[in-house]
Length: 103
Ligand SMILES: [Zn+2]
Image (cartoon, rainbow, N blue to C red; front, side, top):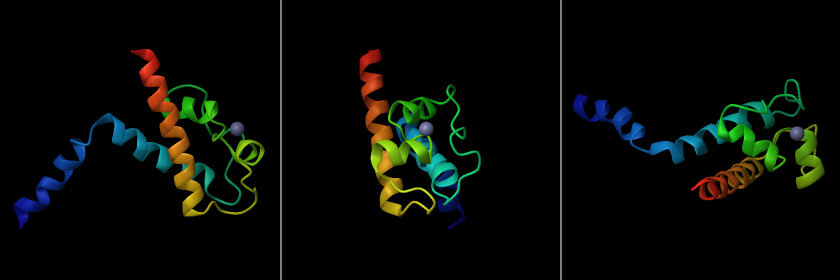
């Protein structure tokens, strides 16, 4: 039993950069966009750094103002699970495309 438990972190590490990005995107959205009134809304997403940040600006999933304007998602209420999943999909689609262009 002990042995099996110790294998869990190793399995996670093997998921690779792609899954890492998805996890990060989901994490950013849950923490910075999903609350009804996110802290520093409009400035919560840095312009540089993690590829997910860049993707968020490119896809207008960087703040609640952009989500409202470009995706028609209301402000002033928490994002639903579906809306969070939608934002992650939009971000990941952009990241995947961007990686293809780089090649
Ligand atoms: Zn924005």
